[in-house]
Amino acid sequence: MSFKMQRVNVYHTEVKDEPGGIAARLKPLAEAGTHLEYVYSQRSATRPGYGDLYVAPISGSGPLAAAKTAGLHEVPEPIVMRVEGDDKAGLAGRLTLAWEKAGLNLHGMVMSVFHGKFVGYVTFDSVADANKAATLLAELGTAEPSAVNRSNATAKVC
Image 1: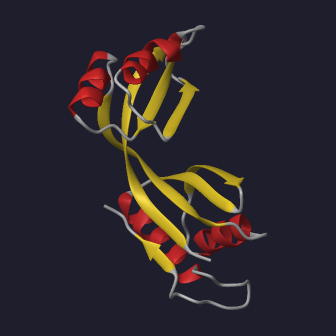
Image 2: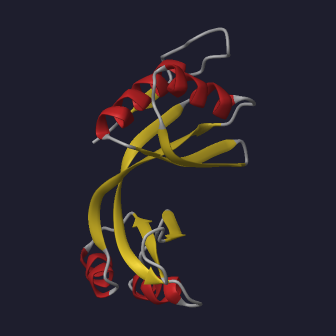
Image 3: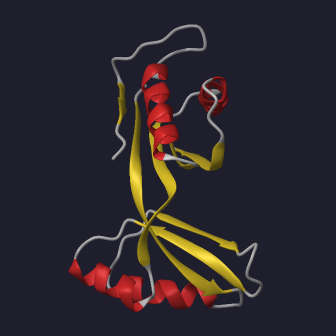
């Protein structure tokens, strides 16, 4: 079993909290052929009637121009890490327990499994926390709950 964890450069914009608010921001990206792997939105806790939209990745002149048209800009926070690898029963529990024991408080987490592989996005409060989490993921490697094998684990934080 192998794991990979890497930083995701995230783009953000505000959206109106109404039908079509998100679609209006995503439309220019779709028209530019942008292949998004991460789309996250939530209502604003401080600004009624608005929400936040985060997307990634955006690269290339066409998608970057479309992002600008849509009001999106790259942001340093939240610290978003993409985690992926082979699925194994209990993996999310072992991983989050290792992070807990290291004193890491997750800002947010979404994980999914499809055809024996998992992919997820985890947000951290700081780059230092993300680095520590990546190191712990690498240490988990192919480990069963009682063993650690580091040979198949990779972790990368930019």
